[in-house]
Length: 185
Image 1 (cartoon, rainbow, N blue to C red):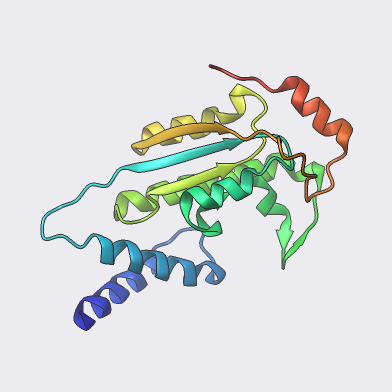
Image 2 (tube, helix red, strand yellow):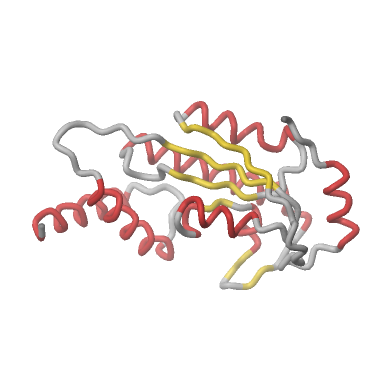
């Protein structure tokens, strides 16, 4: 077993070096996730796991981030435009950078998916948690899922518990989001 663990850690180190867009803060989660996934599946014959992309939709305060973490296991695999505005544990929203934040989020998802093509043990479950009030806002993620072979699920989180959002989004803005929210059943 020790030999197996040593080999897994060696492979994880090699794979980490090839991770595009990752920073050292993510390395701990990478190594632990790689180790857990590889210990679960280290078969003698090829294994092709099912990969899932969860697109989590809802207004601020609905619980999107919480559900996303539950689905994929930890925050490392949850991609959100809000994370672009978090530096050193402090959230500083800048509306002039919203487009840039969404591009960053999309690029991160694609990087994870590209890495999954190198080693199918990586990034089998990815969650994207944004408001996605309009259908077109999800389109890039739906296309990425198809391109990289991910089953894609869109999930709407309702705010039935009535919690406030943690980012201080004004209630008028939230009402505007509710009014424009598109649902395809």
